[in-house]
Length: 134
Image 1: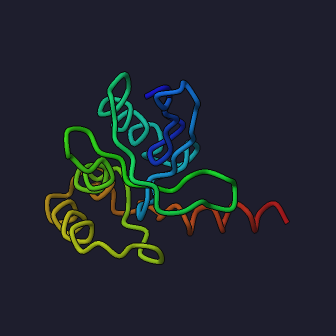
Image 2 (image 1 turned 180 degrees about the vertical axis):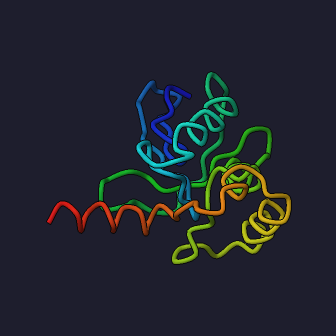
């Protein structure tokens, strides 16, 4: 693991020392300038930085990042971010029921961003920012 860009994007080194930017699959974390963005990034960094991870690539996004599920010792990092309240399930792309269950637990426990009654989903926040720039 080389770096953490935000709460849902990491850069890893493979066995040949090639860097790969990985966008965590099926979740969306607050953006850097958004409330909870810094805490989300810190949560992911605490979990993966300096660790050996396994990545299951599922696709590529429009920015060329690989989309995948990241595991540390068989622990799903995507699910961890959601369960701790540092990411939303990205419902438009999510297929795994365990992520929705993790989000339900986070909501019930008011974990992380769920303690904030005014937290805004990143996809809505990005749309709002984009519209302001027009």
